[in-house]
Amino acid sequence: MDPTTSEAAPDIAEPDVLANAIVWTPAIDRMVRIVAKWVRLDTPGGVVFGKQRIGKSSACTYLAEVLHSAIGYPVATLNWSMPVNESVGEREFTQERMQQSKCRAISHRDVAVLRGRLYDHIEQLADSVCARRVVVIIDEAQVLAQQHYGYLIHCFNELVHRQLRPFFLLVGQPELETLNKYWSESKRHQITGRFHVHQHRFKAVAISEFEAVLAELDRPISPEGPCASALHLPVAYAEGWRLADMAPVLRDALAIAKSKHNLMEDIYVPMQYLRSTVLAFLYRVAEGRLDAREASPTLMLRCLGDAGFLGVIAYYAEATCTDDSIQPEEAP
Image 1 (spheres, rainbow, N blue to C red):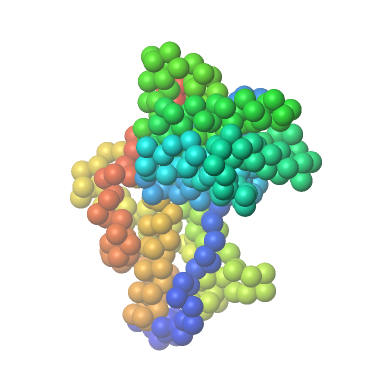
Image 2: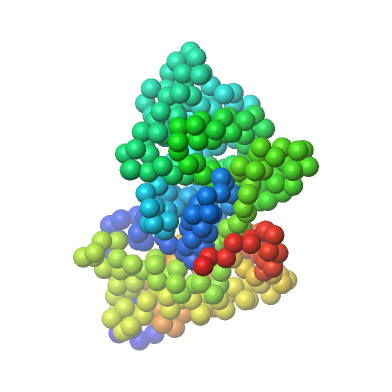
């Protein structure tokens, strides 16, 4: 290896060499635009579902921050996360929603008083941003039991009574996809007509999206600071290499892994594993004094193994979705 093109192990002061922030992905961008369309159409609610550990919770946080810009007018947003315990009663349910809405006065013996405080707080939040539209994002919605839907219906109706325009977005695991049929067959049209009007399948990072996502990971942590490739592989960076240049080799490595696992479906890589793969690559190149521009699929397979992705690759293999009834909404 030419010593002028190899990297020395960097003196890393921070434990995380990549920015610790939610990274834009095409999947998040699609979700934002699709949900914005649903809201503009004045529909009462919709469902976003996807496999475990693919970044849905991060997408919820991102959506809450940018939805008003995507829609084009003021919107009050709340992010709620559901508990796993299906036996949670109305008091505990309401108090948890109050806490997640940053409402402080959560103690009272009368649950009706607690409900009123929650609705007052939501109304005040809307007033504070000069909005009548309220978007409630409910993460881990697959654990909602029938009585919880009753609480949400009451909340929806009360917000309408207060001249607000609520939209409830349920986000969760693949079980949400089949719930619409279940509620319809059970004649629970109060539920389907409010919360399951639309459905969108959220996916992890497609292999065709690697360049765009790696470029986002390579953005400087601060406006004045260096990007990850410049900070940790300065020799390669000076000669034009960037994190996005990992993409072709990463695709080749995944093609090898697909063949070894006899997978025919497309591979989608969750951000958790993609991020860890990038970190493994940076450390391996720096510590081994390698040239990043000469990275091989074999090296990238080792990095994917370091990240733990090869052990779960079959779970994240998906056939291309062609069913318009599942994902009818295409961003304009």
